[in-house]
Amino acid sequence: MRNPKGKLEICWSSEIIASNVDLLTEILLWAPAKSLLKFKCVSKRWHSLISDPKFCISHARFQRMLNRTADALMLSNGYKSTPEFHLVPLKHSTKVPFFDYFNVSEVKIIHSCNGLLLCCCKLMLDKPKFVKTTQMKTDGLCEFRYFVCNPTTKEFKILSPPKPTYLSLSLAFDPLISPYYKVVCICKGSSSKEEFQIDVYSSETESWSLLPILFKMPLGMTYSNGVFLDGSVHWYSYAETSLYFHIDSQSVKKMPMPFMFSWEGLDWDIMYFGESRGHMHLVLTKNRSSLEFDVFEMEFEYTGWSFSYHVNMHPMRLMFPELTWNFMNKHAVFSVLSVIQGEKDEEKKVVIFVDGRAMSYNLCDGTSIKICDLEPRPRRSEIARVPWHYEGCQAHPYFQSLVSV
Image 1 (cartoon, one colour):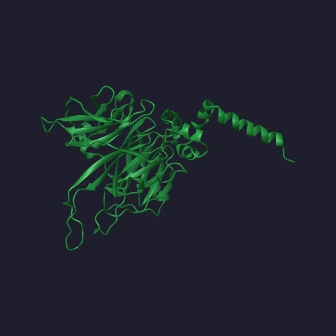
Image 2 (cartoon, rainbow, N blue to C red; image 1 turned 180 degrees about the vertical axis):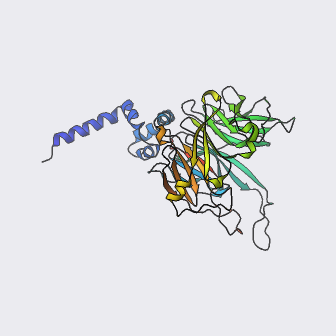
Image 3 (tube, rainbow, N blue to C red; image 1 turned 120 degrees about the horizontal axis):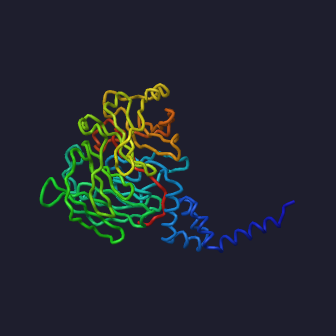
């Protein structure tokens, strides 16, 4: 026989929670962002609470401290027709976010930062010319539009155009620091070809601010792959030092590169430069065909890079004999998509792409597992017969978030 008293107690407890906004808020902070979007349908009161910008930023801050590992990696290499961005899940429940709400044919992910994406779309300004083979020529005029989007809520905001002489854009957002995001742009200086400036877009003012400081880039600095960490955007180079931009002080500062770059930087292949759980990593190799690489980590207060791991993937090759390693192309043998810093040191791993698969390699015990298969992506040119994969592509961390753009 059922206990009606117990049922009444449960209903009474639910009513108490629902009527207490502070208690309800504390409970909802623990829920993932995608679940909260569904919870909006519970009642008008829940919809109002979850839609409140103050709750959204509080949820982002709470989740930032609770879940510091990305839900997935979104892969972007050139302009890809939406909504077909491929995704490497790092958690079992992760699903591919669709981008069909952009209403444009080609979108490129430029940068990701704590749940937000900086994207670019290409729009044709005039009708492209056609030749007898009906293939499109590339001499049609086009322009690029930049926007910041939240793939969880499907909100996006088109940015005003940066300075015409821009070279790169990087997104900077940390809900623990500020509810507003910024876009850092490197552009050419007006007085000299060797001097550069920083232009910063703020979501708070919805405008760009060109800083008066001028700086020169070190040899071989790659300004297209910025990494945001501790309030700064970092870039790597093949020289003894590189640069980072500290946003609050609006200053460009030097960052050391690994010691061997002072005499043989160009002999090394930088396979990965990124951040995970507050740790900045650099993956280097001299020869991908050797199936070996080294993992470095930035030390406290930029005192240098410490050597962390030497990885030999020959055991993975033996464990997965079905994998085909493309030794004919030294740049396409395999790619390092990300270094994932776990809560514990023994959970630290590297995500690798090889032969159409995303593989996980544990840096502590050397074990490997398959994460998922990735379908070959066709070349942008319609006349190309051979598909290309993900060698050299950017893997952008994807976090669930309710933050408004």
